[in-house]
Length: 445
Image (cartoon, rainbow, N blue to C red):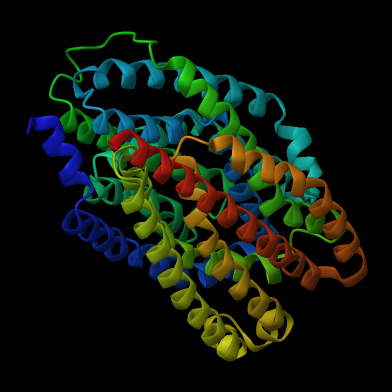
């Protein structure tokens, strides 16, 4: 067996997958703890409105990742496929080609957002006393966009090689400068622009660390900087459909906050965004599993689709049971938790929303399983088409629900949409697996 065959087998072995999942799980517990600890200090130090503005900034950051045009995910899928097909020698040139394209696209997005700073900040109803500060903070955040996009691409490459110790280690500078540094700044410079400057510093450090880790995967990484567009057509096809998903999916996930901020105020929506944001961290456990399985799905789908089906069904069952139990537990003690964490007044206004959000994130975590399998198979067009069908119906339900019922409608409508989305994605995933298994048997007959 040649070295590349050994590499493909090693990267999808049970031992390697379990090791990668464990590393992911252990290293993602700390961010959850830090987020829980720092949030009350930030709310108290900044006030409801400015903390609400930061929450909306993170929403905009979620949207801004579309400026990689799906190439980060496409690169992970392609590298996994090239490992399975024994094309390891051409990886370095392919990586550099995509990195250059990602830098160009994200820089164009950065310039566009910088020019639109004032209209964007005005659209979220920031009070005049905080307007200039909010604009400066937004500009600092936007200037880190190329770093974010390149970091996503580099992380995708490392994930394909199951280098999860490296990918998680690189997130700690981001964690520190996103959460800990702002709390420290409250003592001397409690301003949004200074806090967003810290975000830029964290991303610079993380990107340098990612570059160093990738260079260890490719010994010739810095010595073979070249252009190779032989895979560019496939990457752009995959990336274009992924981009549609990356635009529509975050829009549907975050549009409720934009609606609420426009109809209510940034200060009012913290009773929704705070529990939603904190509970969303439970999805890191699903991501810890699926980030490992995504490249494994991609490699196994080529060599052994029956094995890919087994991994898929196990992940679906285990995550459904685990997150279902977690959602029920959080729902039962939500009021007590909010009282202990923030205040009795906050708990009174937010506990029911928290209950619904716990089930939203449980289902969103399970939803990642069929989504990952479909994209790993190379059929990113399926997820995009399913989302496009849901999109107008979801917006109509959200508009009506928030108008009639206020804050509680936002997570409720999202939960209904996720039920439909998960069922459709699972049906499509099983169809792809069935066809791949039949084709594989015919080839080996």
